[in-house]
Length: 268
Image (tube, rainbow, N blue to C red; front, side, top):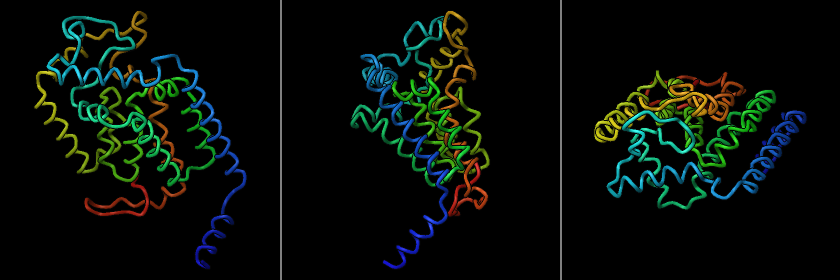
């Protein structure tokens, strides 16, 4: 008990009231914003993106083409509701058909929150992260159940285990963020596994390439194609990276050879 009391005293003595106030204010505002957004969302808006990809997987499991014929056969406008994810994302979406629906949100949120807590970013960084999470597109992505939540969780894990950054390649338009794990041997193993899986699903992969080629951006579609298609997703994905960049513990992180372990996060 004496040891526990001593540790608690040390933690309390080392805390900054101003920093704690900022942290609690940001958390309270985020909680209120997201709860309100879920409550006032229009019917069908909550989990809209997840439902789209679940229908895609169910159709494929039933023998139907993974991508609608109009996306494969000719030019189409890139608007909300079109399917642009590669076929290997089946591994991410298929389990959602069996798991309790709330876990789709709770798991990535818990991973990101835990990472931010462990990294202890400074007050200024917390403010920037809060702004990223309050960005209207970020709020809409979370309410819609967009897979970007899971990519943010992967980048959070990558702060400690670099190979996890490879999961960002499940959304190729965000591939630059996956490069934070480039120097890790495990990252290359995972990229190789994704390549093999894409070859196993070669017919669907070829259809996906055709979809990317046929997608048209611009005013009519409301989106740009290529890497710019996901530019508005970046604030949400930046949260774990900002947490690492502003971490007071990052200076003590040590890069270890494959198979090693570290008490702190590896640089991303």
